[in-house]
View 1: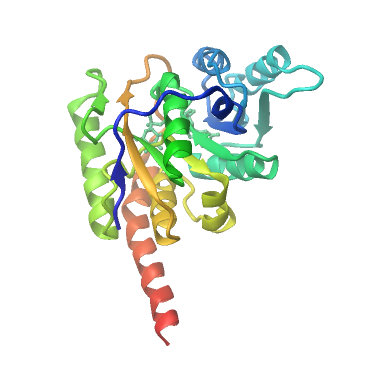
View 2 (view 1 turned 180 degrees about the horizontal axis):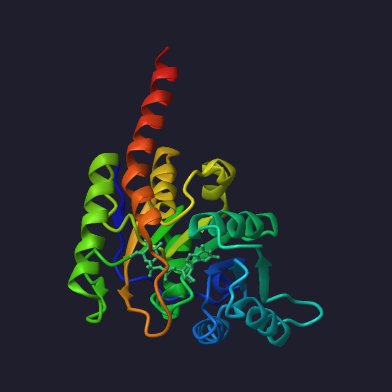
Length: 268
Ligand SMILES: Nc1nc2c(ncn2[C@@H]2O[C@H](COP(=O)(O)OP(=O)(O)O[C@H]3O[C@H](CO)[C@@H](O)[C@H](O)[C@@H]3O)[C@@H](O)[C@H]2O)c(=O)[nH]1
């Protein structure tokens, strides 16, 4: 299964900027990062852009900060920032699935996944959307591992190796050619998300990134990769832990087994 690499994106015509696009941003203890991320997004020249923060009851008060941002950016006739409050930390994958479901239900034509910690470049949002609209691609991946993609110098050798290994591991087991299958900066058409059926996505944690791209490819969706620069967070901590890593090791095998079962059913 293959993905295509896109050259630099086209400039975004004004009417494309009015496309209903929701950035879904999961947060857990991102009080020091969220305000700058939200301001960067809200100052983009994209009239159709909304931000949906999915907060898992962060002890540091991120949920309240998100509410304050909503108050500042919303007008009586227009919601630009919304917050989905969940009761407890329940994993990045589940937070995304809940947020993406709500975004599609509320009429988004495109949904963009983005971390709150400043790793993903807000300045690339228009380019990802432009590439989707210009090419008709169902999924556009912000990719560190296509030509032109780069990684922060601050990333430790250990984290670089882990990221490369995780990508090679998942892609080899699943037989995909997406160079950055673990990327968390991805644009999805609402149709692609409907085809995947978010209710049936099994990943609780970071393996969500791999599962979603694999399922999109299996569902016949087109996936393009656009180079990005990935920054390391300067404030706060990654929430990666052993459970997240174990799920990421097991998930490609589970997905492969499920696909084999589905092919068996079809052959019968
Ligand atoms: N709501 C919610 N948000 C969460 C949770 N866990 C993490 N987040 C939020 O999800 C975003 C990414 O979490 P990090 O813990 O900072 O991720 P990372 O280690 O930098 O990993 C990122 O890059 C990887 C690729 O290298 C990605 O695979 C991974 O999904 C993520 O995007 C942040 O905004 C963080 O607050 C959770 O359980 N619930």
